Amino acid sequence: MKRASFLIALFGFAASLGAQTPTSPAPAASSLRHLNDSFADVFEKVAPSVVVIESSRPATAPISGLPQGLEFFLQYPDGRPVREQPNVGSGVIFREDGHILTNNHVVEGADRITVQLKDGRKFDARVLGTDERSDLAVIKIEGKGFAAAELGDSDAVRVGQFAFAIGTPLDLPYTFTVGVVSAKGRNLEVGAGYDFIQTDASINPGNSGGPLCDIDGKVVGINTLISGTNRGLGFSIPINTVKKITSQLAEKGRASRPWLGIVITGLQEAAQLQRYFPGLEKGVVVRGIETGAPAESSDLRTGDVILKVDGHEVGAAVELQHEILSKEIGQRVALEVWRAGRIVKFDIRTGEQPDPYIRASTTPSRSPGQRPAPSSPPLTRPSSPGFSYESATPGALRPFGSERSSAGGVIVTNVEPGSPAAVAGIEKGDIITDAGGRPLGSKKDLETVLKDLDPGRGILLLLERGQARTFAILKP
Image (cartoon, rainbow, N blue to C red; front, top):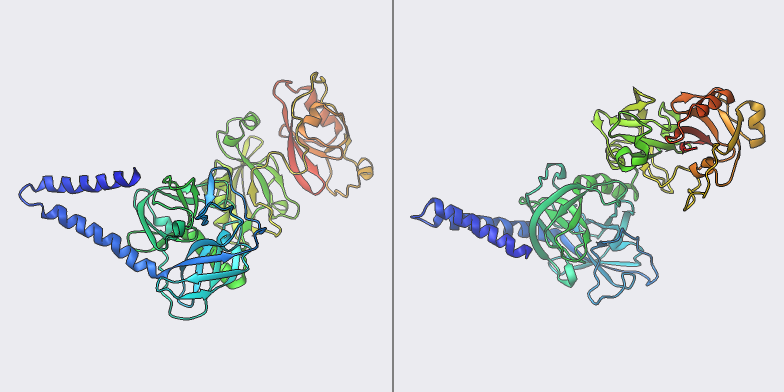
């Protein structure tokens, strides 16, 4: 149906040209021939740089999972499970000395990788570097003078422009399909916060790692995901993202990323938080700060709402992720945040994301270290918050082994099971530093706040838990 609609559109285009010059059909025919030649030129330019990749791995080798409905373009010609081998994917040579771009899942766990060129030559390949988070890999074959593809500029790609895919779908090498770029900036909750280009160019299992090209034959994306099989919903990693990552993979075998070390949630993604930030329609709430992260030594606090990064508005967690990932490690970034009813501006310097992987920005179901809420609330809710506390003096902190040097706040000495405090995730040993936007200097300050608390509204508490900072919402 999709291909038929495309042909109807082309014939309609030709008919419109013919209607403009009823005495001569030449312009319509000439335009179609030009379009026909342009498509063929793309294939002839790019195909020599496209390769067929066969990888073999033990049948028990794991393959990373995906959200339901998305599949990698791996090859299963006889319907075997993904973990059985061999797997067939695609790749594209991007350097004349045999450097090849492909997907990590095409070569992941492989004990042997074979690359076949369009002229029939076969080479054994070795892995130079892989990156599971972006699903990219760089492999290499030995030799010189290989046909290398020209890499384009994915930022310049426009929705609606022609898009061409070349790969090995269903064991059919050098299959060439055409469609359009149907969307940009797709976030699919995979790819460590990176966006995807969406295309309706027909792609199927086996296209993984192959190029998505523009009308000039420049590679603008690496095909990676599909929704179902041949449904007109394919997704490619933008080539500008690919360039950043693969340059690191080729040089040092791994990719480094900037991070802030914060746990975040977009206000529009968590309606229950909106009431605690009056007057804000969008922004990204800092729910926690990782121990040892760049944010820990900055002016950023839990409970802040990040509104802008270097002047660019951020309304969702993924938008903040995207902004930070676009920076360099060690770069100063200007933040504009909402804090207790006022706007605060300051700089923060990015750091390098540590390994093992800790997300630079993510949307957790709960704050770091916070216990999950019970699956159902207690049958009767106490009228009191359900926790006891003392001023955070050195003597009160000593039994909890706290070496906190700063003054102020209150320490939670006990939490009643099933109480509002327990449901909120407050734990024994937590230090509450702020309640409802009011800094706490002593036990008396918190008593005053809780006494005036509207039972139906709840209150936002900022917490120190060990070396981490987070918050809880208490609803007595």
